[in-house]
Length: 429
Picture 1 (cartoon, rainbow, N blue to C red):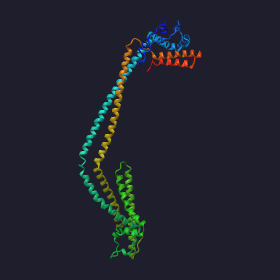
Picture 2 (spheres, rainbow, N blue to C red; picture 1 turned 135 degrees about the vertical axis):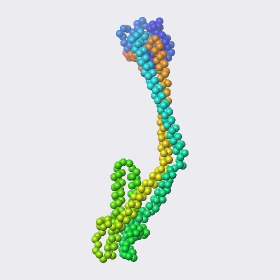
Picture 3 (spheres, rainbow, N blue to C red; picture 1 turned 90 degrees about the horizontal axis):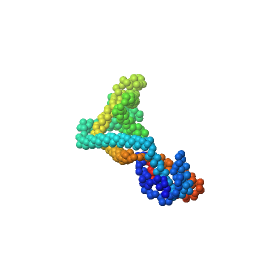
Picture 4 (cartoon, rainbow, N blue to C red; picture 1 turned 90 degrees about the vertical axis):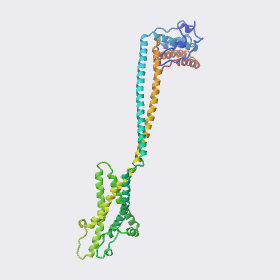
């Protein structure tokens, strides 16, 4: 009698028909081996471990590798029979399958809800993209309908700024030269012996005389107007800032400009006063800030410079505001285009997420169907335990081979046969 018949065996195809877990067993159809051994004491004894069982069976066949594969089949079949008869195990495995099914159904429901939310978000983003495109189209239609008031302000301020700037260069270059480099003498007095203020403030030869005096003097008087223009520019920028700090910076800037103008005016008025003192027979006190405060020429020079610089700053502010109003359409267009680009990127991300969710939902269906199939059969098996005991059985077999000092070739042959068998049982978590 062949070993498989003595063990009550069956074909390998009939051996693996269901699984203990939701995942199926993959197996090959293998015919019963022809080379088996005859043994009467083949059954596993009561209390005997599978390791001991493997050692004993290997001894009955003297480690013949041709008997290993059918023995492994017989062990697997025996464990299956034990599990079929174990009602508690069958209930546990059935409960595991039911719990796994509920888990998968819940997961699928959650994924479907996420997918619907993702589709709704895609619709919202697509609607917003269309809305922004409509705004962009409306903006393009009105691009030639610029603000007429802005054009008027821009033209007016341009007309004012050009002569104002020229005036600044003439006034401050002359004042700077008169205050720091020009010598006042009696030749500058008029027919009545009076000094004309205009001669001190506006000197047509200031730049030429400064060039004659040296390049340092020339650079100095040319940079003086730029300083006050910078004051006007900074005043405009600070005035447009937000926050309380600007209310400290602006008065401080105006105070600094006023002091600077006052010093220039004082220097010129002092030179005029000294020249008048030379022509007077009466004694006069030295020029001081008190005298300057009562000197009309002192305030005239300040007003011609300080007030005009403030006016220039305000006019420049109106000019910049008009320019921004004219360019508002272009700025708004750029903002809308950037927003559309961001929305398109967001839509691509949501579409990719939707495809992933749809794929995950589709993958859950076959898993649930497989569990339904396994729950409908009469018996289920704990494949992990079957594989464990087969390993224990083969460990006992290897122990016997080592005791007989079998060659490495024979040991490897036995290992290859075992691996071929064990690969037919796949437990996938």
